[in-house]
Image 1: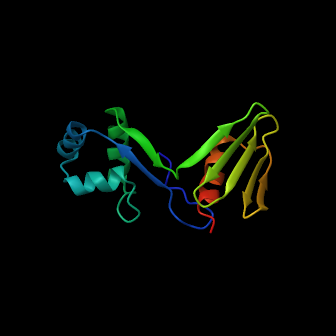
Image 2: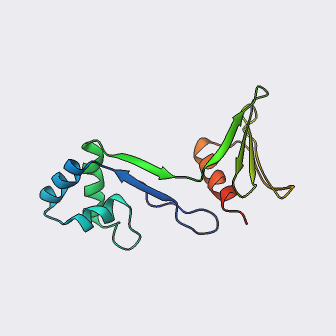
Length: 135
């Protein structure tokens, strides 16, 4: 299981494992723990969510149908015929990703503030979070 990731300005990426109530109750009985311990594990708590027990709770949660969820900023996304994806965030930042070349540019207040080449999808996620947090 991947540890918590951070955006370039150091803020934690919000993610959690969604698991229904019967699944959480099953885990509490299996590990003989309370609801807070399960929540700390499923929400990747910075203080208490990275123990061995938390890792095992997350593994069991996924085995019982839990789904890893990411909270990301809402943005408008347009896929154009020219092969460029454009995303505009609430702060005015715009991400332009060329699907043909793998190049990604971030524009903010009329200026190009970031350029990346050969971008993989995992890096695109980080770039999007970074752009959404620009001020």
